[in-house]
Image 1 (cartoon, each protein chain N blue to C red):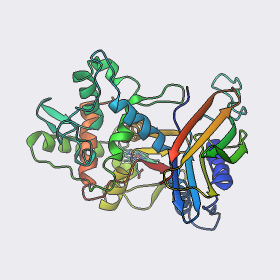
Image 2: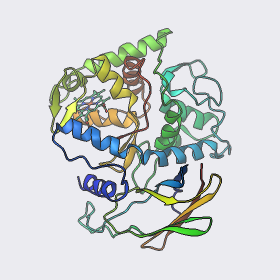
Image 3: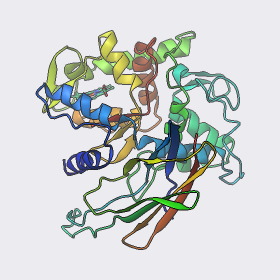
Image 4: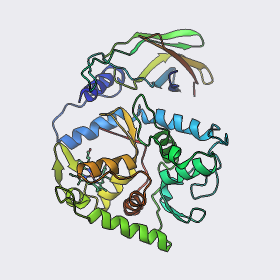
Length: 269
Length: 103
């Protein structure tokens, strides 16, 4: 809350071209206006810049850059790669989402141990995450490109089916599934409207607008982080970073977003 | 050392519009950590911008500016290819200078 107020002060003070909207309207509309007011100076750009630097700077025991990393469209092709992820990678023999693939490239190209490559997936101000910066850079190179995840082989179909199962799986102390909070139009919790991820529009917006700079946290957050936080809200055990469950759930949600022009890194309340 | 700024400078008519994103915590000095200890104030204090070496903006900032500040300003003049430099100094004496070319 405190940071939100401070952000509003900064907007009032410095982005003179943007009038602070204090008019009537639903909380959602106001949050949307606020989001647009901040769009032009989205601090997510700072993560993109840092990520591009990490991509191009030799690192790890092999002192290699990530420029030859194959994100699915051939070594070194970043443009449009995220819009087609997750996908099946023949060299690894499994389905990977962006983060899993980045771990793979940091291990195979740079010589990091898998544990090191998976360390610190979600950063804080005094512990910046390389993963978040790399994700910001790679995703920025798919902006405007329609999501196009293909279930064109058995492994992808299997991942999608598993993800769908997880989405509707009820459990935990509240007997909640993702679908409990995200399966109907017009629901809200606290002040937040809950997107209906089972309808096309909600599924597209919910996926294509991550990663995002969370003003309330002053950090860029990835889609993986979003899933983790929803696992927490659902009182489920922690969703392990780059795990098969995480990849499967991402595959299900990414496929359902197909057709939507990818629109991130974005900015959220 | 502080992360680089992102600076965009664009000419529109006879005016140059500059947009700057800075990477900074901007701690107010009002917050407490999980142990209840005050987190010391830490914020950008002075901001200047120069165009071809001439000062076009000079500002004093305080802790009321948000984390990762965004600054947008205009000045009369400038030509495509000219350099705009932005500098900040924070209350710990940390500083950062970055440059952009007017497009």
